[in-house]
Amino acid sequence: MRFSGKTVVITGAASGIGLESTRLFASEGATVFAADINDEAGKLLEAEIKGDVRYQHCDVCSTEQIKALMDRAAEETGGIDVVFNNAGAGGAREKIFEIEPADWDRTMDLLLRSVAFGIRYAVPHMQDRKGASIVNVSSVAAVGPGYSPTAYAVAKAGVLHLTKMAAADLAQFGIRVNAIQPGFINTNIFTSSLEIPDEAKEMAKGVIAQMSSNAQPVQRGGQPRDIAEACAYLASEAAGFVTGTSLIVDGGITIGPRESWDPEAPGAFEALIQMEEAAKQAAGE
Ligand code: NAI
Image (spheres, rainbow, N blue to C red):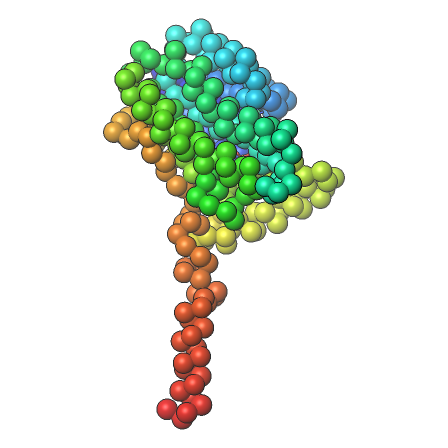
């Protein structure tokens, strides 16, 4: 019961990482303010999850709604101990040479501005809480190309820097701020924006589940629980000396190119050795 008596605010709580984190914090004694735009799923949360879970409609693109969420949590419980800025989606898919300004702005609002104001409006309610902690969701996409569309990757890289700046700004209040960089986690994020019929979506989910199981050195798919556990650690007293940093939770996907860890995918070096062996055999050695 690491979070007994604590107030925790989680955005994007109706699905995937946010949903599993809501379950975990509630199971460890927290009062969880679970925010999302999916009101149907959000209302189900309150009924289905054991513990004190209170759903609030909050579109994180609206600073008014973020403020209302934080104000409600503080009003009902006296303050906020943990904020998990998690809500998100894939954002604009276009490459930099074709993206439109409105799509760029929409993606930044959803993935970066939302985190800035999730911090901004929570802080007045966190300043006198001992052990207060903010956890922001970035992504392995922040380390470089190859993991997501451009605008998403840039926003997630911004979340890393925002995390450091906020950690510096908020140290004086005893508030720690950290980020998590999930790898390939098996959630609805990959299919939710697809404009295809429901049956096709279900099939796509199956394909994603299969892909996620062998996309990285750890030979299983990443699960929302993997990220929820990382969030609980960063939010807990065990991480009391940890601030301004980011925890990569990716099954090793960022370790290096596939040939560095997959014996079935030999790289250029292995190809040279094979050539050498073939040459030796041809020379009768
Ligand atoms: P998900 O699609 O399962 O859940 C996202 C939740 O956010 C949904 O409940 C959705 O309704 C909510 N949401 C979307 N737009 C919102 C808005 N404007 N306001 C409030 N809520 C909104 O996706 P998942 O994977 O759980 O994503 C959570 C976070 O993790 C996102 O920030 C995502 O970018 C990040 N992430 C996910 C990875 C993955 O492989 N699944 C990898 C790296 C980062």
